[in-house]
Image (cartoon, rainbow over all chains, first blue to last red; front, side, top):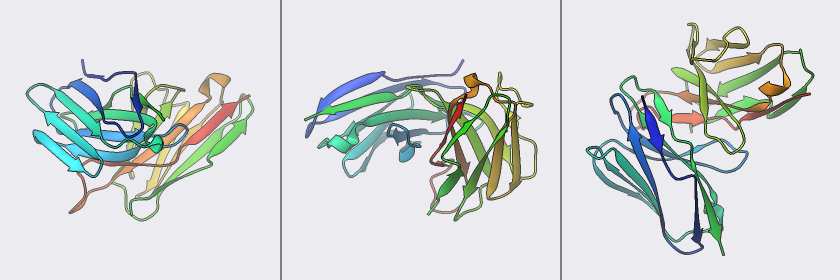
Length: 109
Length: 119
């Protein structure tokens, strides 16, 4: 079966760095997405990785290792507004997104 | 760019009635639209995928006669919850996908969601 695993909840301090991990098992693989979702709102796109390596975009970076079925989202210089759920989703061989359950990130002052 | 609207944002209806939710891509033509539901503190659950002019493909366990999807044009899809019951109360989110140079392949653009409460 297809499966995405990510931690349910993480806590970090304002100004610090946090890494949210995601492992995936899918039938075929055509890339991995990270989305941010604030409570009661729709998800917004953060990143897309299809090749191995690190993609940096401002305070947020995303890493992919296809051989390990592993990705992480790195958030630097955390701000209170970064408190949200972070959703990992893998694109399978049919180009369908397989969603993880999301990681709720709590930022403390 | 790539804005998706959803209407209404909130709706309260009585048990047994039907509710229609609209999803529009405002500044692009969507090749595919998706409908999700999300329960509190849970992730997105894909209900169905629709392409303009063809029947929607429903995920296993989703009743197609209860959740009617019409994808009438490249910018509009509707979800009608028929004979709604309290257990249908949820957050319904649509998304749209398009193709083109310079775009992230297979990225989905999400609408703001519709909070449905059935009393």
